[in-house]
Each structure stands twice: as structure tokens, then as C-alpha cells.
Image 1: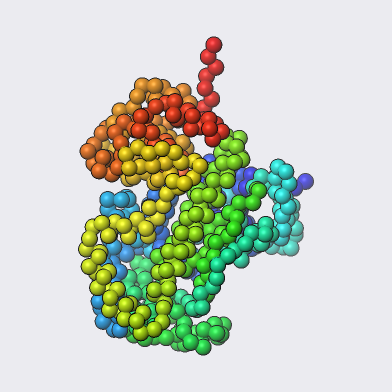
Image 2 (image 1 turned 30 degrees about the vertical axis):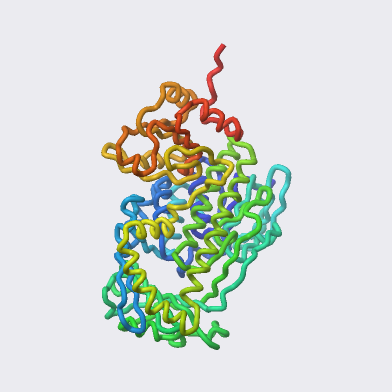
Length: 515
């Protein structure tokens, strides 16, 4: 007899681990396998964005990540050995999120924390366990796994989640394309101990003609992460490269001394999005579904948001609370964002790496001046924070999104409103449908919520809410992943009822049978 579970997760990087955590918190049985020996020892992803931290509150992890990470005070821009601009990053999004900073937390440490959290809930990653193949039946997936000792195991699962990276076996087996390309540049990444950098403890980006380097501090004295590109014929044979072989023009321009190289690696960067985020009972998440340049620190965070988006939908369907068609919205919502993200990071990456006299002039002369001046504008700071932090992400074109009340539409991230009495994000730690009203809720709305087991949170009206785009006395129905599902300016119970009926989603508690 084959072993059984609700969801088989293939790949124990941040995406797969986060998916396992969100599913487990909702009572869904999971098994998570990875052919590696354990969590990653090297790290490319460094930034944990504000939106990820907001959602980590559902996993009781936000504070642990913040305590373990490092809040970057500022980004410094250098050109040809001269310091050109300092852009403060602390509290850049103070009006937008409770996490208004750029947090540096290396991916390898992040993964170990996620593994520990999962273990504390009674779920252990099955390391050295490889997915060999799988077949989809009418009501389940049958997967063939190879254990560390060579033993093969058949496993049946209701659904399979491919979180197995850019070379995903799951993606290959379902025949989903991966359109895009590979940048010609070879990247290097190194953990180094440096002295002489000023200001110390901050981020630095340096340009020197066609060479550039990014230097990130992660909170330990003199310890930094270096990221740059390898040029010319040396890039053709990365297997033989050492740190001594890479161009040091931009590094030398920072006026620092590298005392020790603790780790060095090279890699190529791709920009691709898969054709299908879902095929039947199989889903693709993270790098298995989309890869892009590291510009803006978006990759790992995007995979974690994939997991957040899919988890509540899988939980609802597995528990019989929603039709299978709910799962189609995962592709609709996440594929659109992935394509937009690839396009955006591609443009930024092209700007940073373009060669030629004019490109060099723009990078070293124009960009620092523009960045320094533009960042003094509050509206520009907020715009940039929203984009980088992923707090601007919306699902307005999703079939799950409906209505508009004030400036807030169905599909939007709920505005963060730390009121004088209560923080409207506190109830979002619960992974469930809920209703929020700012002002007064109609009596029939309160009765409807009580009858159907949906939490109703009413916040006393404050003038600051109107500035944030909230409509007084309107109903905001929130999905389990905290995005606005329905915005109803009239605050009618009947509108809520129709929303659930039209989508076939069962309410948490069945209505009483009245004569």
C-alpha cells in the first residue's frame, strides 16, 4: 500500500518550506522532500521584504526573522572611486508598513530557521529523498520517491507542489514551457571580511566603467556580501575562477581592504516564466515557475508569496470548503505578477550592466545625482518602497476580486492603519476569511457574520483612514492570505452572501436550519 498525504512538496528551499508551514497551520497533511543533504550552505538571496514579514505574522515568524536579520541603514552610491550619494533606507515606508525597512537576512540562515519552525510543528524535511517520477490519477497523484539508502517508495497525494528550482523535474514532467533567456553576464558572489569601508555597516553600490559591485552588510563586524559580474573571456570558464580573477576596479573604488574571502561562487542569471503554474493536480512555485535577475532582491520573496497564495486555496479545496476551480486563481494571480516582475528587473539589470561610453556616463554621472535628489521627495520614497517591498502587488484582475470602496479595490493589499486604539493588521494573523469595517457596521452585517462564523472587526472611525483611501462604514472582506476579496461601499450582508455563493466557497459555519 502506498503511503498517503494531502500535499507532497518537492523542494525544501524557502518556497517549499513556507508552503509547508502555511499548509500545516491550516491542518493540511504534508510531506516535504529534497534530494540535498540538508539546508543550503551558500546564499544568493539576501533581502526579506516588508510584505513577506507582514505575512510571516501568520506563522509567528516575523519577529524572529527581524531579530536574526539586519536593518540596512542606507544605500551609498559610488562612481569611479568617488562617493556620489547616500540614500537613507531606515523607515523608508513608515506610512506604509509596520516593517518600513530593508532587512538583510542571508537565505541559508533563513532556510535553517524555516526548517526549525517546521520541526517544532512535528514536520521534518525528508532530506536525501529524490522524486523520480509521478503519475496523475482522477483523484490523486502517485509519486515514486528514492530514499537516501536507495529504497524506492510509492506515495499518493491529493496534490503535488513543485518547489524544486529552475531545473525543476516537476515542470519538465508536466511539459510546461519556460520561455525567456539567459543573461550573457557571469555573476560572482562572495562572503568577505573587509575593513576601511565608510560608512561602515551600510550597503554600497559602486560603478567603474563597465564594472559594478554591490556590497551588503548583514550585521556582523566587518562581514559583508559582495556581488558583481565577471567580464571578458574569463566568464567562459567559470569552473576555474577564483576571487582573484574577477575585476577589482569597482571594488578598489570603494577604498576598502579585503582581508579574507570566506566563500566564493559564480552563477548565471536567467529570466524566464513558465507557461503553466498549474496543470491538473500539480503546481509550480518559486524558481520552478519563474526566475529573473537579482536586481531589487525580489526572487526569494516572490516564491514565498507564491506559497502564501496557494496554501489557503489548497487548504480550502482539500477540506471540501471550495470547488477545485478556486485553484485556477493561483495561476491567474501569480503568473501575471511574475511576468511583470521579470520585465521590471530585466530593465534594471540591463541599466546596471550595459556597456559603452554613454551607459557608463549615465551610471556614474547622472544616476547618482538623480537618485539623491529624487529620494528627498516623500512621494518618490514611498513609490520606491512600495515597489521593492511588494506592498504594491495587487490581484485586481482576479476572479476572486470584486468591488471598490473609497480607493481600495478588491484584490488590493489592505492598507496598514495603525489607529489610535487598534492596529488593523493584528487580526490578520489568523488564516481565515474575515470582515473589517471602519466606522459602524450595519446590524444585519453583524448578524450575518455571527451566523456564518466569520470574524467581524469594527474600528472606530479616524480621519487618517480617509487619507489612506478607506471608505467609512464600508465592508472589506479579507481573504485568508489578507488581500481584499470584496470592497462594498454599502456594507450590505447580502453582497457578502452573493460573493461566496457565486464562487462556490463554503462559509466557515453552516447556516442554521430554520423552519
